[in-house]
Image (cartoon, rainbow, N blue to C red; front, side):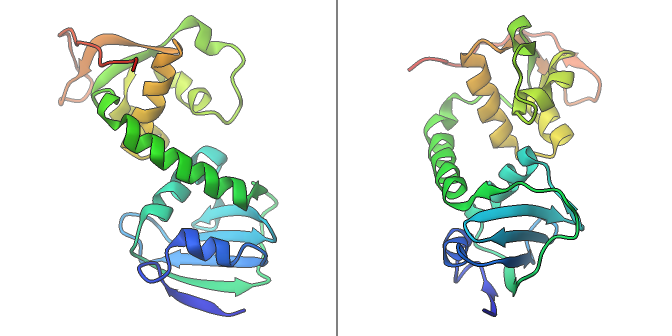
Length: 204
């Protein structure tokens, strides 16, 4: 099944549904600020998501998929039967991934007014270090949160979209796993402004 076109005429969510029972490589390029990407599929599953010939780990792959589903720019072509040359596998259920992506987008829009300021400094609480799923956002962020870091800093360090990082910090704060220090990251690298912040609302 040869298939090619642009995401403005066939968005990625619809494209993945169309290819749900196919095996092959979906190549996507001409994306603004995003390197060419390959999504490897097998019937009902995403095998892996690659950039520059290398597979993305789950946290980065989920964030990229979220961004790609929202975009309406870019070109694509599907290559039937193609498989990744590496052995790394996500093996995500395509149906569950699409559902969770739509759910996450709804939550991002609903809670956006409550997101912390991009420069507000957060630190991990003591309970944050216990029972961490290996691939969780908190696990990846913990080395930075132990020292104190802003959403902007984490976004750059983890190569994740800023609003997604703010959303994660918002949820972690509500669970008591991170805390605001009352400081703001200065526009000058390496400096902190020591002014006290008023915490944003954390209950509804």
